[in-house]
Length: 151
Image 1: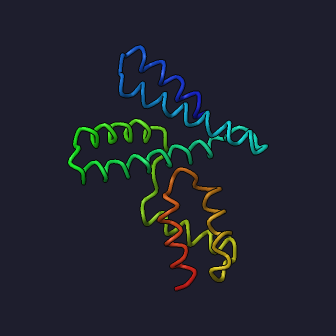
Image 2 (image 1 turned 180 degrees about the horizontal axis):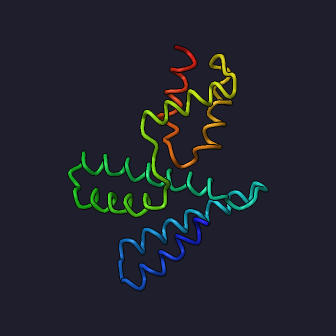
C-alpha cells in the first residue's frame, strides 16, 4: 500500500538524516491524514490508494504553481526548495502517460462508453479516472476529451 511505502520512507529519511525528504514526507503524511479526516466527516471510508494518488497530484500541482510564482518574484532559493519537494512527492506516483497514450486512452474510453457529445463527458472522465488514476493529468485530459467529443 502507498501509505506503508511513505511511512517506510519517513523512517529511512530519519536514519539518513535527509531533512528535506523527511519534512516533505511528513507533510505528505499530514495531508493524507487530513484528507482521511475530511472523508470520515462525510461518512466515507479512509482514502484508497487511488485517492492518495489524487492527493499527491494535488500537492505537486500546488508546488508547481508556487515555483512559477517564486520564479517570477526572483526567489530562486524558494523555487528550488519547491522543486525538491516535487521530486520527493513524484517518486510515489506511477509513471505518467505520454500525450499519445492519453489520446489513445481517451479514444478507448469514448468507444467504451458510447459517448456521443458533451453530455457524455462525465462518463468518459469517470472511466479514465477509474483506470488511470495517478497516471494522467486530468486537467489536460478533460480538454482533450472535450475536443474529441465536439470535434
